[in-house]
Length: 305
Image 1 (spheres, rainbow, N blue to C red):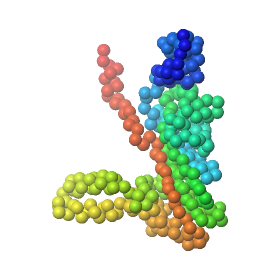
Image 2 (image 1 turned 135 degrees about the vertical axis):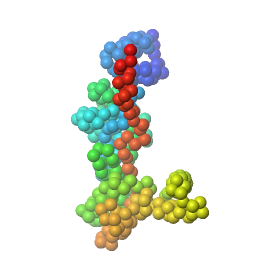
Image 3 (image 1 turned 135 degrees about the horizontal axis):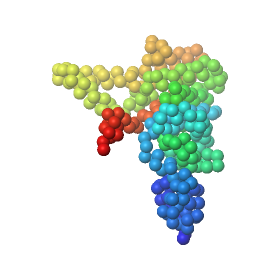
């Protein structure tokens, strides 16, 4: 019995096995879907499907900078124990390095690309089976600098990853140790200070409106007079840039300087023009709802007849 690409897709969705394994299973079983599922289960290749519904909120942030290209990738697993596994760490390293030359615009495209002899998705399935936990590449970011400068990278404890793109009009400045130190300091600052925007004029109106609503609720909770609340909110919004915009924030290593002044000081020393083009900050597990185990409920279930 013949089979189609739709059959292969359905088998992949039901078993979580790789595309080539699904094709082989259907070929071996004359296109019979249920027999193919049994075939994959017998080979141990369908086990990953059961793990696909688990919550993977642990893992590592991988980072690489090669030439003018920098990349960050978040790879998740279920437990911190597996995040320390050498196979898992090597996988994260390999994915980060693959990103340097990858043409993918999103995770789905990335998973369909070849990484070695297999697609990334097939490699994920194999690692899931080997390690025994759900493994997933959740997201990635890339930066490519045009012209002179540097893409800096920093990963804090495998949990927070940062890229900062800094350009200069001087090739000599770009090659200097002082410039590298500046870029590294900016990376450390972004990791610690959690800026949301680069500059004040980039704060969108929706963000301001959300913050204003929060301020209003807080002030009412504090019992502030109604006629004062509007002016207090305006004052808070005016200070917002110094809290969430990189160039306006106080430098974590020297609060007497803003990041803008830090860059300006470097320009004065070198006579070169420095521009912070942008940054990315990725925090492991951010936005993933973790499953919280309730010991009392577990014990109750175990004791029920």
